[in-house]
Every structure is written in C-alpha cells, then in structure tokens.
Length: 169
Image (cartoon, rainbow, N blue to C red):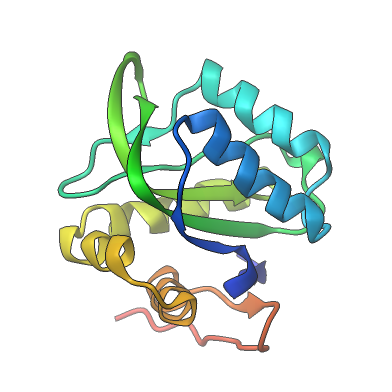
C-alpha cells in the first residue's frame, strides 16, 4: 500500500453526536474541508452505510469502518473518531441488528485494492481489546496517530512527514 494521508487534523476526539448519520457527516465534512475527499463523499458514505452496515461488535469497544467508492476520494486517507457516547451502527452482515460504536475508522481509499489491504490490517487491531480500550480513552491525537501508524504499518503523509519501514516480525 502506498502513502496514506493521516495526521492529527483528521482525528476527532470525544465527538458528540446522537446518530450514525451525524457522525458520518461530521467526519466526511472534515475530510472535504481539507480537500481529501470530494463533496460527494459525504452523501455517498452515508448512503453506503444504509445499504451495507459497517458496525463490528468487537470485544470491549465496538467499531465501525464506513467507506465508499473510490470516485469520491481525492487523496488516500483514514480518519478516526472516538465518540463521547456510543452511537448505534448496523452490524456488518446483519443490518437488522445494531452495535453501540465507540470508535469510527472512516476509510477514503483512491484504489479499491488498497481498501482490502487496510481492512485486513485494521482487523488485527479490532481483535485486540486492549488497543481498542486505549484508543477509546486516549485524549492525545498524536498518541493515537503514532499507535495506529505503528500497528497499521503504513507510511504517513500530512502533518509531520514520517515514513515507517515495514517490520514483518
């Protein structure tokens, strides 16, 4: 996977929203303001969430991984939001069921194959209850950025320039 734009400006801490649509709109608008996604991204990601739920009832803190098609993306980006209070998202594969989500990982990939690669890496984080609890409670955007960059093993662009060497141990 090539470089991903990921810096403190697209990490939202203690986001206070009541509905998944409001969470997705706030995160999408933040990305659009920075020119990372097209204006169409916001409605597209909300529409896709209705059709294909992305909530995952992981141990401890449930997560959601909303995303949409590549034509709505300008720059490969991942945005993260920790929610002040959990918000119900439909469960992936069972949209009739919901899970109270505490962390949202919004993916904006400019190539379809990159999305699959990133999802595989994210699944390793989602299986670690301690990392999820840390992310849900951490108040430092820099600490969140650094932990995710290390765990996801990707090169960063944006904010301070940082490239991480692949360490496959």
